[in-house]
Every structure is written in structure tokens, then in C-alpha cells.
Amino acid sequence: MSATMAPPFWFSDLSRDSKAVANAAENGPVTIKRRDGDDLLLLRKSEIDQERAGVDLISLVVAAAVSNDISDEFVGQLVRAFPWANALPSQDQREFATEVLATAQAAAALSSFGKLATVVAAWKSTAWAYENGYPRHHKDSASDNSPIPRP
Image (cartoon, rainbow, N blue to C red):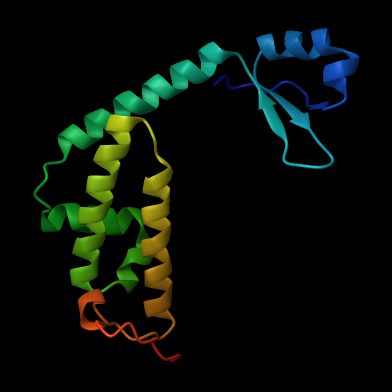
């Protein structure tokens, strides 16, 4: 996207003076402020197409650069990138790296990154639980599906 943002417009400006809003969007992204919901962003389609193409290319290059063998070095680099992963036991750090790599490769191939964000958020929640005293049970050890007691 362009580096400069135009001044924001109100949602009502779209009906009152749509030409001014469209002209502003020609110079860069325009924030459309709403009182009853999240703000919107108006920009040229070519800008988002270019950004998506760039993200797709970078994702594919990164996915190709990382082999499917999860090395200790890769796990360490991922833990440095996500410092909260230090709260995970080493076995879970390796599982985190394996799942993130597989999900990232699928996301890059499909140009859909929602699941990747969900996977990372789930692992972050697990790290938080460990850091806050919840027992470190491996998922296979709780076969009875009983609740884990509070610390």
C-alpha cells in the first residue's frame, strides 16, 4: 500500500461527496470512519493486488527455503521470533515449529493465512497456561478427557 494516508472521511461522506472520497483514494488509502462499526479502508484494487502478490511470493520463498526437516536451529529461530514459546517445554517447542511450518506452507500455497494466525494464537495460549502454573500434560497423556485442575 502507499506510504501516505489521505485524511479520513466519514461514512456519510460517501453519499454526500463520493467524488471527493474517490479522488482522495487515488492518492493513497482512505480511512472511512463509522460511528456504528469498525472503520473501513478504501484503496485502489491494484494496490491490494500488488500487496497480495508480494505476500504470496515471500511466503512461497520462505516456505521453499525451509526444509521439512525441523532442525534444532529452526526451532531456536522460531522461539526467538516468538519469545513466549520459551514457556513451552522443548518437546512442545518442536511440535509448535512442526505445526507452524506445515500450516505456513499450506497458507502460502492457498494464499489464505487465517489458519496460520489461529495456530500461532493457540500455541501462545498454551504457553500462557504453562507459564501460569497449569500442569504440563502432553495431549496424549490425558486420554480420559477429564478437566485439568486449576493450579
